[in-house]
Image 1: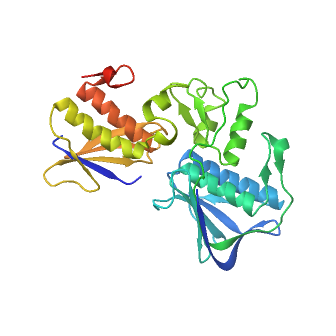
Image 2 (image 1 turned 90 degrees about the horizontal axis):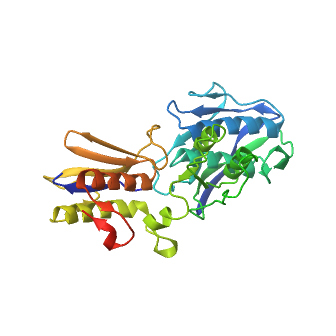
Image 3 (image 1 turned 135 degrees about the horizontal axis):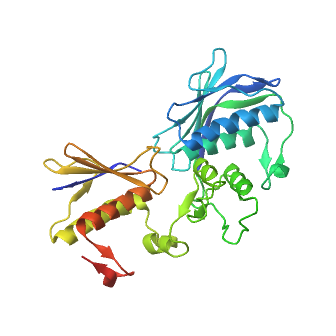
Length: 324
């Protein structure tokens, strides 16, 4: 999401290969080390564990070392975040320069998908059904990644299936693992994700909670072709309702602060305390920041400010349900 400033008185893929290749495993020996940043998110930490585990399993050899620094004599595989505008929220970028390999995502879950792409594309593994019985691969002592740059974004923004009728005593953790390994990021009712078995698994795989069940998501954001993305909606809503509630003019929405006006920054954050649908409101000096892990979190932050400090309430759908 571009950083949008409101000033007020308050998956296509591209691959460019250079012909060489970088060995991750050779003759069952680890030729690489996995480098994880110090403040890595839970999906990034899972990505490191999965990459090390399955490189060893597929090659029939040893696990690469996972550390915050490269290991001497090993090709470093960096798991990291990127602000490349070509990479979407669930997308990833795999690039090599010299003897380094970088797996990057706009969010931690994108890094995880990049790892699964490498394991499937160059390791040959497939997860056909949930559980260990659905895991298929042939021993491949040498695993190498071609040099170059690859960017992959999801072809579909929503990639999920419903667990609404799935027996709660069934193997839901296996299903969640299988889904992530096949690049699905489905939603689950908030009432179910508090289960001790599901909580950590959910966080590591970026599963979004569904607050409000069947009706509230389309009620807030619309459906189908008319659905408005949070990235575009949050700035517009803040400007419109500040003017409407105050009975005055709309603040200017732009990509840069306006001279003489207090800047309100609408932005994304990688603060580990902020969940996927959460938001963070902070002020420093003469600035206000409304941040979310995802665009919809920024939108919820805007609505929190409008309700808490503007006093507006939306009681029922439509303009007749708007009270302030």
